[in-house]
Length: 144
Image (cartoon, rainbow, N blue to C red; front, side, top):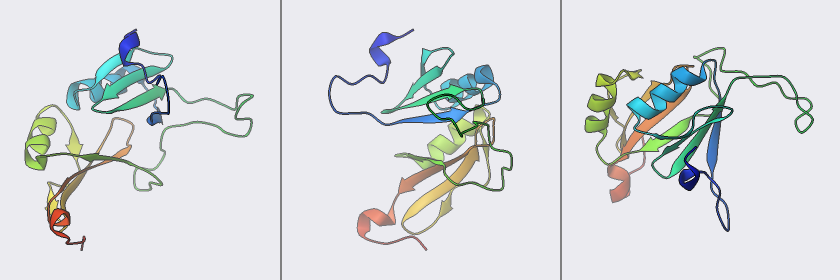
């Protein structure tokens, strides 16, 4: 365990993102190897620090006493999403090339949306991840 990188603020709060995954080891490899995350805790739950955020991963499961009516499971239909991660980068083409070479599967190459260059990829469980670089937005142009 890497105690110095745990998401445990001494004041205020930090935001983490929890993913229900089907294979913790596979997802840990993806977020560490492809996105360059630092593994803070291997499992139960797995915690990875990526840039200024953390991803926490565990397998799915049934209700618990603190969430009595909730069952956790990975996405069942990759064509439907109610939420996704959004990664903002300085150089989208460099990230696209690097992450593709490391095994990331993008839906399309980066597309110019006027306000930004943007593309999407999926993690091993099918979670959607947007990768974007602000361009026109910095000049006041909105997305088309």
